[in-house]
Length: 294
Image (cartoon, rainbow, N blue to C red; front, side):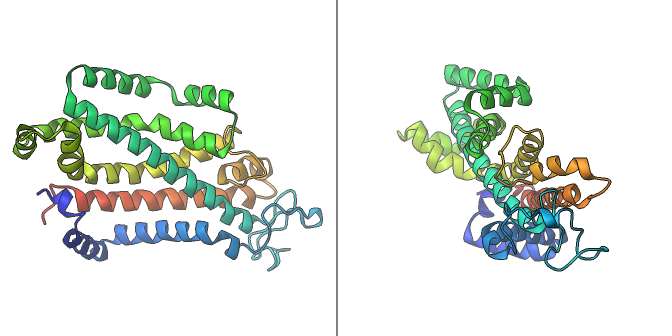
């Protein structure tokens, strides 16, 4: 049994928690990710104001610690008098939803095609490999523009676009590991005893490559959050009145000299979330890496 697989079992979980307590990077990453997820889940309870409520008499209120700030709007207000803190809290919900949902779609598709290519080989491998090469060669922005032009910009569209454009990376990794696993004796024995390739993939191969998929998915969440923020910033992502950090930066960039908090705070939220996911992904890679001593 590999160390990677062991890390996913109960004893491996205890080992992972022990390593987590010893890892400052793991502790920090876990805290940052958990805090963002909790904020996203509890945003309706934590937000002091309606994120879409306009109050033009309170436009450009500075944060509470600046001259002219007040405790009613802790992080100030935007050009329409909307509470920045409330909008940041609600914006975390879309970032978390897009990051998780897109990775689930891309990871599931990529793992499926990678397993099929690695186990069956031959024509199946050739077709899937060419599809992987094609998707990896396509310019991301052009592909996104084409899909959004057909379906229109929306939350569902962004999730589907990021999910379906991300499957190729998973497929390439899973295909390579499956081909290596196919040469192992226990896989050959299962096939020799009459087990179908799909059963071998589900019962023997995939459990032994799950660690790599988990690490890749964790790190891909960070890339997906950045992609969603970039698309929203360009006006290609989720549209108003929905609240996203990318939209907040886009609408606040014209006021950097007079109301810097409109763009700086959502930028800090994106950086905080992405760094937390990267830290957690690095820790998981160390824990689940089969080359790490147990």
